[in-house]
Every structure is written in structure tokens, then in C-alpha cells.
Amino acid sequence: MSGNLHIFLSDVHLGLKAFDPVAREREFARFLNNLPQETAALYLVGDIFDFWYEYKYVIPRGYSRTLGALANLSDRGVAIHFFKGNHDMWTFGFLERELGVNILKDPSVVDISGTRFCIAHGDELGNERGQKILKSIFRNRFLQACFSALHPRVAFAIALRWSRHNRLSKGEQFRFRGENDPLYKFASEFEKSCKVDHFIFGHMHTPGNTLTPGGAGFFILGEWIHGCEYLIFNSDTRELIWADGRRK
Image (cartoon, rainbow, N blue to C red):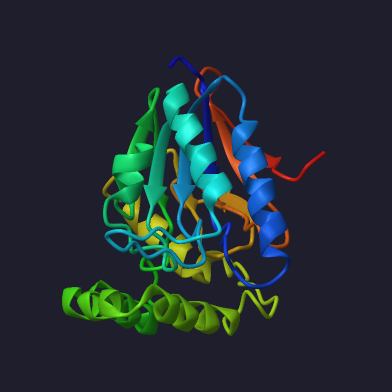
């Protein structure tokens, strides 16, 4: 497919049992189904699902419209790139085999028509020691095998109950801390050894942008719980602009 639009979004948190999850999934699927024909690639920058865990023969319920919309995009020839967030890191092949999704590591440097992007969900790029310890537990193969041995009804009940008590269900949000922000510090160090035109991160849930000390664009994507801000890059004009996914 020939297209010039590249879409970046994150933190939809489909399935979060707060703020009308059914309506959120319908609206997100509508958004995907209405992406313009000029769309060349879609970058899903982590936490698209509030909890995603693949069993060998069981697929989580509640996302049929979204999965169908992603399948349609893939069939159209849109390249779909997926970054594992701290809520949806348990992908074991379904998204790749069934939907044609490409899983990218966190962070990844991507060249789009000569413009270089460093893209990451970002939850492990700061100095949050507790977050890193938690992720190492989640990645443990033995513990994953133990969790997989649970009946899905029990496993998902545990996970979704835990999710209801996180900051999202309470309406809390991160705040960008400028030069003291862990992601900004990461970008400032990263650009010393790797030339990048733009940094794009998720995880923080507070959309915004500034410049790094080296002059690169620094962007934090919005979340889709209370808003739905995302980025569009036009590879013909090299413009990177904000857009809003809410129904007009």
C-alpha cells in the first residue's frame, strides 16, 4: 500500500472497568475503521489493552470490534506496529499470526522517509525501580506458566480487580516534570549517541511536547480514558501534528 500518513497512539486501556469501557472500545474501533486511505502505518505505543494475556486456545473477550478493525487495516496493507506496555506485555503470537502485527522492542529507532523516530512506551526507561522489579516478575517464564495454569475466569478476575484499583480508575494522571522527567532525561542521554529527529513516548497519559537539548522533538502521547490525543506524521511534508480521536 502506498500512503504518506503514519499514526502514533497509546494508552487506550481497553477493558478498564471504569468510565464506560464498552463505549470506549466501540469508539476506538470506529476510529480505526475510519483511518484515511492514505494511512501507511499505525504505531500502537503500549497499553492499548488494560490487560492482555494470551492463552494457547483462549482469546480475551471484549475486544472483538478492535481486533476486527486491526485485521481490516492489516488486510488493507497498513503496517501495524505494537509496543508492549506494562499492561499488555503478554503477547505470545496471536497478534502477529492472526492480525499481521509487528512487535517492536522498547525503545526502537524507526526511519520514516529519512526522518528518524525513537519510539517507546517508556515505562522502563526512567528510574522507577519498583516498576522494573515488577516487570521482571511479569516476564518470569515460570511465573507465566503458573498463571497460565489458572482457569481464565480466575486469572482475569484477579487481573481486572487489580486494575480497578490503579490510578486510572481513580482518575489520577502523571504530570510532566520538564527537565527532571525520567523520559526527558532518557532522551537527552540517548541523543548523545544516536541522531534522532523526534522522540515519541506513551505511559505518562499527559499529552505534550517540547524540545530536547539537542533540538529533537519530544512528544508524550495522550491517553484515551479522558481524551484521545494522538500524532500524525506526513512523510511527504515531514509535518508531525496533533489530532483528536473523539467523534466530531
